[in-house]
Length: 422
Image (cartoon, rainbow, N blue to C red; front, side):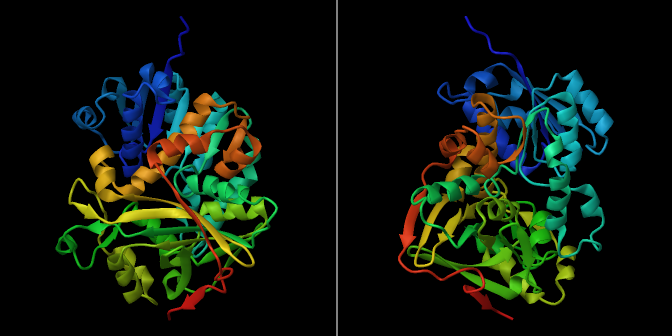
């Protein structure tokens, strides 16, 4: 009988919504003998690390298949010496980082100890703590700093920025491009329309900002940054507030206007494909209205009450649509996934956005465990182009189906589809 080594998984930032969603998917995988990570989870320990104390009773209710294997730890990830001790003591074989801790520091710990690593976004503590110095450009600075040291991580395999976007959308983009590899696109754009909101709109407080993921991270993109597009290897910014500008998105009969926000996948896709790229995002009308009311004094929004739209607290309607729009000189092709909140909560106990993010992280974990991947730190698009990864197969297990299609005409590149609202 072949025995599998005992896995020891550490999840950083384990009290947050993304972590809860990841645990929910892993719990389903642990209960499904056909799931590609089932055997690994059958023989594992799971260590949850967060500054906030967590209750074991919550784990027993939410993830019953995993709860006997879960150990809770409370400490600050800025204490990297303690983190190293934890990883050595627990004989960690995988780190899933969904925290706000410094990505370079977390990855350095794992590389030193030879522990594979997955995360969902680039974080940099110094950039966060020097908001005025990097005002308008925080993501570009995080990306610049990480690129300076990315090639030094050679002792492990790490999959970076693997959520829905960034993450699954890079796979979608490459899938669309495969349809006609001889055709050169003008632009590859990430598009998202999140209509999630309370089923009973009266449950909303008039002056509260509501998002389906971290409101602080959302405001970092929507208020504290300039609109960013990428042309090849060069990020460019428009000297406007994000919510001054609209950009038309058509996906067959589906049409909306999104705002141009800085995002990691625009940087990586633009560089790898040599095309224009950008992220066009639309959120609920309530939060959109609050931001537009504060144009010219958007710093005031940081003083507002903020809340995540949690279906466990109040029933949610709406859905999250995330995909890609690939623009050619005479047409457009698209691919997207849409999940509604009621279905996501009924099956996984989370909102639609967190389910999509967790699906991307699950895909990275499954690929690390089941595919032959090279050493080094890889963004998802790099991984798919340079290794035999079945990432797209794994993420589909929880995302379900996709909508694909073609627009017979095109609205053009980003500046051509821009509508000035100021």
